Image (cartoon, rainbow, N blue to C red; front, side, top):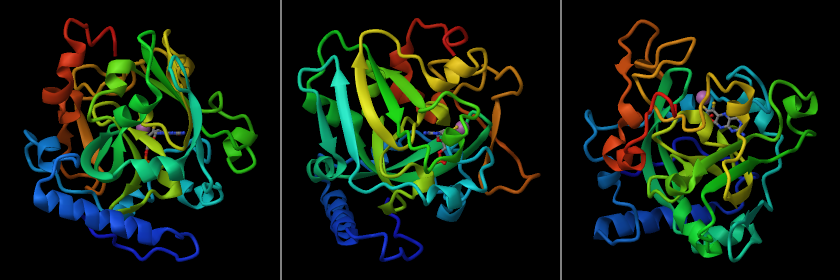
Length: 305
Ligand SMILES: Nc1nc2c(c(=O)[nH]1)N[C@H]1C(S)=C(S)[C@@H](COP(=O)(O)O)O[C@H]1N2
Ligand SMILES: [Mo]
């Protein structure tokens, strides 16, 4: 399913819009021809009832958790526009054969973008459905050749206190924001690095120019504005887990049966639904159990929350 960009984009900001247009038509063509190598969107969405429909872009792009900028969701969009995102580079290192510094532009020349319509569930019990544009993280990791000693993947967000008010003030969390996955989670085909949404560029408030999306985990795992990826033999210390270990586990798999200490996770409020309309039931692994449950066989999900 492809969605046309809704709002016109400002021409000053978009120098490579042509590039995106070409990509979009390439994706369309490949989907129409059933060619492999591009995500079968239908397959990614299989088994989900009712069929997913995207949350309006305007909501997804104006209600944002991005603590480097603000603690409230409404002021992030404006503040985030100050972050410089051009000439972005990504360092990849640790337990790999071929570490290096890569320009995002070069990475994108090699990685065909795919559209993935995913559920997204914040630990605060609201949810949305987002058509991301991105590529499987496993494809990038394969290029740096992980060693067999690589058991975890650590992600680090940009540190730019000049442009990120809460970094400048040293408020709330230890900056930069860090997240991590187990290597098999990182290599799972549902795990993507996103560079766009709604058939267009990724807005700054949503983590431009490069963010992680792990659809079966709570939203805080999907780290924004990534500048570094390190493969490690030991479990990395992650931002939320460190700041409140009893509230935010390392795994953070969406699970209706494991409550947050301060609220239930059994239901969620779809973004855009009226205050008093029915909430929807939260699904185990956010609806992706069929694809990911095998990663956690024999694990007590209450203990490893
Ligand atoms: N660097 C960074 N990444 C982050 C966050 C953050 O504060 N800083 N918030 C997380 C949380 S709690 C959520 S719910 C999602 C929100 O993504 P969105 O604004 O695109 O909806 O981003 C996640 N990634
Ligand atoms: Mo969140």
